[in-house]
Amino acid sequence: MERRNFLRGAALAGTGAALATPAVSGGHGTVLTMVQSWPRGFAVLDDAARYFADFVAQMSDGTLTIDRKAPGELVGALEVFDAVTSGQADMYHSADYYFIGQHPALAYYTAVPFGGTAQEVTNWYYHGGGEQIHDEIGQIFNFKGLLAGNSGGQSGGWFRKEMTSPDDFNGLKYRMPGLGGKVLGKLGASVQNIPGGELYQALSSGALDGLEWVGPAADERAGFWEVAKVYYTAGFHEPGSALSANVNLDKWNSLSDPHKAILRYAGMATTLYQLAETFSANGAALQRMQSQGVKALQFSDEIWDAFGAASAEVMDENMDDELFRTTRASFEASLKDSAAWISKSDGYYVQQRVRVLAGS
Image 1 (cartoon, one colour):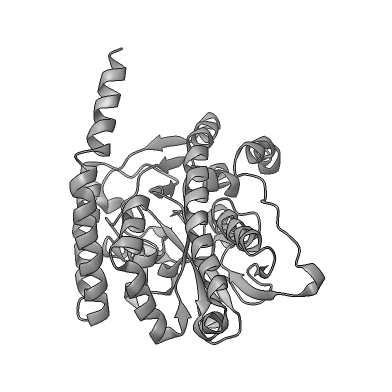
Image 2: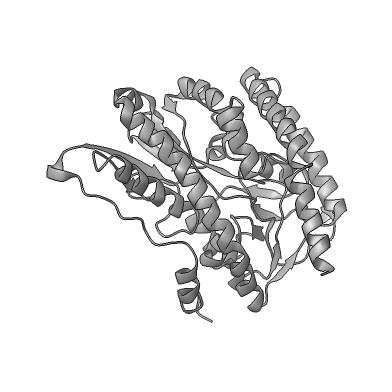
């Protein structure tokens, strides 16, 4: 079946329609050039970038607008960090863990192995010191950090065969960015960080044996189900993946206080709106892919244990960096506080809901 035909109906039921964007009256107002790591139309990720730009325009009544540039229109998908910190562009929308080569602490502003859920990440960012540390990193690299989106828990990924033991990762050509990719490297995988717009071709050509992307709503639209039929629905690497809309620090400092506030609050609104939309779309998207022959599986406890051991090694390898140590300590302290309540409230409630309703 042609992907475009199958997905035509799915797209209508998937991510929502564009929000109305007011025009800038008389050509006046501030325009920020935003380079992004996502091609136009990419589910979840480009949706978040689009919602963010729309919210900014609406909240400012058109006095602050964002000119979005997809990969290749100004810079490449993984060149957005350098473009913004150097002043070539005003801001970027991306996942900060793409740039751990600049500093490993940036991983925490997307996701780390066995890290926080989307709720726990935002708890830390806004109420546990995460935003202040983001600003410390920004002072080093010349950006103001902002969160603007979260894809939720990301899937374990796509494979051509079932993974029965940790040994199956040895020699596997696999796409996984961030510290999670380094974990798979510990298991012997040949890990690659390929931009999203190139993934379908890499998987279909055999350049990749497998990949992880986002989750059912985004993965369905990307068409990975056409060329790989084994899908692990839970992953260790990104339990709640934040997206960033970081602004060149010089540009940020030139903005009015109301415009700064609008950017920050638009990021908050984007995170809530886009995350809710993604969660609401994932279940139906998974069912549609299963109807096309996709096997939805879970990794064995043996594989999860191997992920855990390798993750501990990767995290500890960065502990010689003081800023990484500070970020990790702050994040883990917040995670401990969040988990102490969630396990006794929402987590326990969901277990009981499943048990009680199953018997009714």
